Image 1: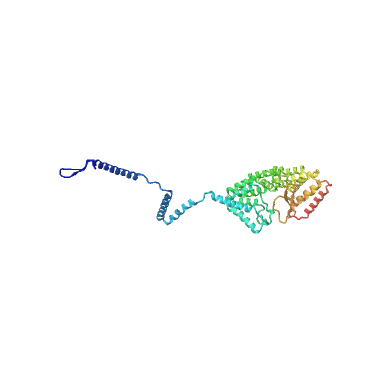
Image 2: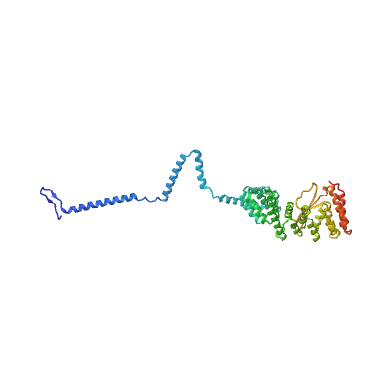
Length: 434
């Protein structure tokens, strides 16, 4: 039962008890606080940024945005501008790095080099095999500068494949793989190929390389690389003299020395230095020096060397004697002093009648009889040409005079020499001359 029951007023209305008023006030305060808290929370919620979207949401939004932008761009572009704008980004995005084409090309070059280095691997080379080999070489050339490194890498190893031992390889058009690769460098041309050729010139152990490169470089830039070629020749000659080139034939090097002499370079000392090891090569090129510059070296060679060396020198002097008074005088003096044996005199007689020793493919008159000779000592290969049938009357007269002087100088006891000279005189007399 309540402690303060309602009381009646004088007019009959009821008066609420005094204990209810504080409760109502408290309830109103609490409602106000709740309203204020709600308002504050609402304000905070409005000013706080929304949570970051997830990666999936971001990707989807980006795709949608780019699609809208691209669609808008296509609507705004003219037909002429639309094509480049659509292609350029795709090329830029998918184009491979700059080094990728070089890697792919290098791989192709290795395949080509493998094909080139295995001719006749499965037996005799057929026409189809030869055609594929030549196509591989031409493909190497067409690749241009990108092939140079692979070619130079092979050449730097100083290896070769000699096609002479491969049946059917005559269809290839080259005597060896190196010859084909050097020719490819010449066809490629440009600074990269030239640098590779000059490098090979310095490092090659093949005299034929030096000759081939000298011809190619001379064709590309006449006279520009004469110094480098001569240095390479001298370097290889020094190595060959020490038997460090595997017995390679150095004939091409002697020919290059002769070519240098024709261009005004004095190579007499070079030829003389190696006359003992390669007497025929040295004697042939000494006899071809301009203005008879090699006569004194030939005389020294004939007087100090015996056997094959003396034969090479005296034969060269006999070739020169009809046109060179110093060569004639040297021969007559040696014959008179008994420095030339009976056999030597007999061997040089044909050279007084028009025979010549030649190195390389010298042009000879039509109908000239030519014979190849090989000297095991020094691995020397040269040819002997008989020019008797192409001599003029004046030349015949000169040679008859030389033979007569030698016949008077040599001892009568040198019967072989006397007989050989007389036979040669008869042969010359019977020729009408050209």
